[in-house]
Each structure stands twice: as C-alpha cells, then as structure tokens.
Length: 558
Image (cartoon, rainbow, N blue to C red):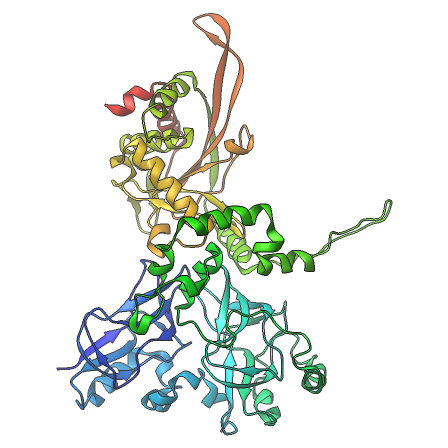
C-alpha cells in the first residue's frame, strides 16, 4: 500500500513550507532514514528524512514551490503501483498543485519547472526556463537582490550560485537548478520585488525571450518596466565584455556536493568544504558534517584571520573595499540613505503591532546586588563553572513566575492563557536585528545549565544556526543592556508574552543600609506589562518576589 507524505509542520508557527532541494527523484529506491528533500521555513532550512521504505512514485511539490502544511509532498510505495486515486484525493487541499499538475508527473524535468509559468505564458521557447523570486520563508512576501554573482551572457551550470537574496530573516544564496546561458535579469541589485516576480531567464544562447518578459511586465521588480531598454543594451554589452570582470563564486570547475545550509554554515565558519567529509548519500555534505568539523588548525587559522583580514578572508574584504568611508565636508548638509533589510521590516512590523495593540505600562524596582556579586564569585570559583549576572536574573525570574503565573500568560480574544510551565526567551542582538532564543522549562534548570544554554544559544544565534523550534514557545522574555552600560530602559513586549523584563547595569553608589550611608551596588529592573492580562498589583508583587531572590541568592537553591 502506497504511503502519502505531506508537507511537515517543522515548527508550531509554520503554516507553509518551501521545497529548496529534492535529493530523490521519481523511480528512486527509498530506505527508511534517507533524506528526501530540504525544506525551508521562515527560520531555517531543514533536511526532511523518510520514515518509510519503497519507491518514490510521485512528487507533489517541485523545487522552489511553496505549499501549505499537510499538502501532498510525495508518495512512496511499491514500484509500478497505481497512485492516481491518491493524487486525485489530495488535489483539493493543495492550492498550488493546479498550476503545475502536468509538470509534476514529468519528474525528469522537475528541476527546470517554475511555479505558475504555464499560467503566465502559453508556451516557452524550447529550453528556456523562467526563474522567479523564491519564497525563502513562509512569512516572506518580498525579496531584495543583494548581489548578482552572474551577469547576462554568462554560462550557468547546475549548482552555480546566481545571486544573494535578502529575506526578512537573512541573506541567502540562491542556487541554480538549471544549466544554460543567463539571458535576462528581471530584478537588479538592490531592488525589491514580490515573491514570484521574474528574477531571471536561463536558456540556450541567443534565444529571444522578449515574449516571455512581456508576460511578467506587471509582476516583476518595482523598476523593471522603466529599465527594460537598459536591460536590452546590457545584453549586448555583456556579450562583448564577458569574462573581463570575473565574479567571485564558490562553484568553479568541480562542484562540491553539499546542501545549501551546509554551504552557508561553512562560509560563516570559514571552513573549506573540500576538507569536509560528507556523510550523506554519495558523499554529500550535510549540515551536521560542517558543524562537527572543527580541527585545531582551522581554529588557529580563524583566529589569525581576525588579525589579518586581507590574507585569510578575501570574500569579506571585498565588500569592505567596496564601501568607501563617507567624507562630510565641514558646514555642508549630508545624508545617507540605507535601504531597510527584510529582517528590519519584519521587526518594525511585529514591534509596532505589539506597541499599538497591547496597552503597555512599566514598573521599576532597584535591587541591591552586593550578595549576588559575592555569591557569583563563590560559584565561579568552582572548576569549569561560569555564571553571569544575567543567568542569575533568568533563574530568579523563572522562580518568581512560578509564584505569579498571571505574569506568565498571554492574551486571547476569548480567554487568557495562563502558562504553568516557564519558557524564558533571551533577547540576543545579531548583525541584522534581534532574535529571541528560548530556554525551555527554565524553572527546572540549574544556574550552570542556564549559563551553558544561554552561551550556546546566543553563539548559534549570531551565526544564524538556530533551529525554528529553539525560537518558539516563550512565555516571558528577558532583555539585558546592562552589559553595554545602560543603567535602565524599557522594552516592547515580545508577543504573545504578557511581560518583558529589562535589566540594567550594576552601579556602585551610596545607599542607606541599617541606617548608615554606605557604598553599595544596585541594579535597576524594569517590567513592561500588558495591562489586558497583568494588573499593576500583580506586576508589583512579581517584582517584589524577584527582588527577594536577587538580594538573597541562596533562596534560589531551596
């Protein structure tokens, strides 16, 4: 009996998934544990393995296509088995299957198919492939072409990196699944266009694609119509000067078989994929191979790279050289316009929704930190132990939330959800914005476990290696700017949480203790609350309990 494989829900907020790469084709033998495809969510690209054995009989979602959770992804069964009834029965729940139904059956051409092309063009010239702006996350509506690594007239091989595309989460390399000549570029560098807009056209050299571009004239990049004439001139110029200015690319003569996620992690870690042994099928390098590859020589090389950037990181030095330092003449007005990244747009949208939807109010309390400082010194004197003040705040917050569960809640139109488990999100600043990895069941963790987990999550957040599940399910959030010398501040609530704690710096100043003015160390804590769920008295009682734990750290061990 054939088994229907549906688009998996890889996170609790995932509603759609994009098939980045199919690692199997129709007719291939599948064993339990084989990697079928790489599926992209709004947080990461994840490998999807088969839990069944048999023959791959049908592929329901071509590469680059996005489909809702539970849509027909594939069918596995006995070789030659008739699956037409299964396909027919699932077709109504798969919105995008209608546009590509005929092409899905012809799986030998699956990598050259483009979503909705048949609806936009009656018939493409022979060998021509339309490449549209991919949906690289389920929240992505627009994409920005950060860099083109190929130009019109260049020869394209399967696996070549065409461009770097900026989404709301990250800048990702976009790999070609087709071979031919780059005939047309529909979205120029720096331009933003909706998903499914005409990104590029690949086909036999010299093919006239004017009829194809006409069908996308109203759906391409925002300035594609006004630059059509320039684009035609560029084609002739690029043919004359092809090869004059080589473009940096990881794929030259011999292609390294690695997943896109593995390539991205290797680039961030400065690892040469030629040195990595792949554990996937046919020696293919997967993400775990790169993450586990950390020889001593490579670490020394990476440390040297930070001291002499020109010698060890040409790929990074190139953008620095291309961005000259702005010189402002004295007495003249000067402005600089920096285009908003997709991540910044999403941050702006989500925080605006939180600020204008949840009625915020703020409670502040000053905590004496002398005993906490002494306790931390004792703890850190133990072998292989490192606890920060932020770890103490997180532990104290978790214990206080257990005593005041109304603060550990979220607002729904019909009811207030009170969480009796504690999952604390820790705000981490990254290059493009802010992410919030989550410590699950924080109240059950020791201080050393919290310290180790925060260090691990923050490190992987800055390297963009967090999995979607590691950034979901928070019930409360802690944001700490004390390490930057900020004494006190207010934060915007990270919805659907009802509260967020802002942690300031420890300040040495005169305080009154036992009727005497002495020098002490204090820290300001600010609690932002959603007044729909947390009343003033409830928030104040939570802060009082938190203060008691911080000023008497030994009570956290009880």
